[in-house]
Length: 424
Image 1 (spheres, rainbow, N blue to C red):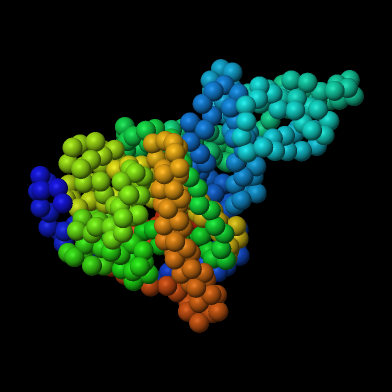
Image 2 (cartoon, helix red, strand yellow):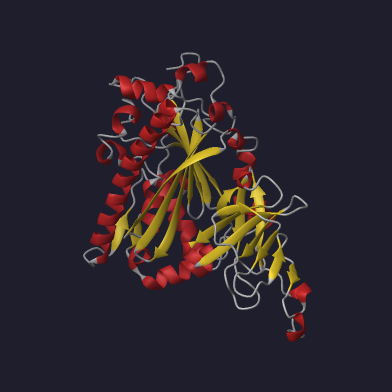
């Protein structure tokens, strides 16, 4: 433990739901089992909120593009950097007969050419050429380019908004979370590895799982518990809970007394990959990445592990000393979801040993996420049968209550007030 940090009375910072005025301790089962609620979520949340879809460093050079499939909205999106350096987003559909123009996941192109009839578009979305153009006198090329999608960027993260006109700007949507994380070194960790899984469960079960530590000592007893659970906080209450509109952050401890039990694990951890194990030397020397940021661990918890940051509706970010973990939960239906996990670090493996370390980290991440997914599947089975009319959220689960409160506000047509209006 870093003995230079003052000792903190952890119990002072174990926020209870009642202290935040959250009295919604019971949540209807229909939120997790109803096709009608899923349809409403698509229209009232996912077509209104700003959705994070990637990193700006995925399209570094003019002409670089990526294609993102957003399963919740059945949308295929091209995100491209134009010759002018501007990053734009478009629906991946030709104006002639709707054919998807870009079929590769990524590439570099100054133009996009429809494979069906060769209608051609610049990477700024403008319609440049129509073969046999005389047969389309009613088509004004200036009005028939690729259909744009509202795009904005925060801290290198690319966000899209599918509303005809966004109700709030991205800055207003983030509601101060962006200010809290101003200058956080996300760009220092450009390399990522992925773990993706689909399961028959409602997406909100996974959001809830990442917003409480109550389950860690039990569900993750063979994976996370030894390295995470500190003796003074056996149920892993999240500390210093903060809300930013519908978003939130909370401080999570680690067990600094834990040490790897095998030479292999010791070696893997030494490779500076983002893991659940804190790099004590880096922390003590002030070179521990996110740990040095003033918005993270503002209480200076000596055995700080990570800050769990939730960006509504479907993002969880966990900054670490040597990188960060990124989780996204996409609903596919009322009872099926896709989980996408990205492990961000400084650089791709440079040799076989580093590749082995990365593979080990990916396997460990997969094991933990698989435990969460298994519980979500079991929750879906239990809630769908009709034996329970609601879920119960404890006083130690305030983030679950906060998310549900904001979820309900969005479904009712609210939740998107600009900052000035929200302050009134």
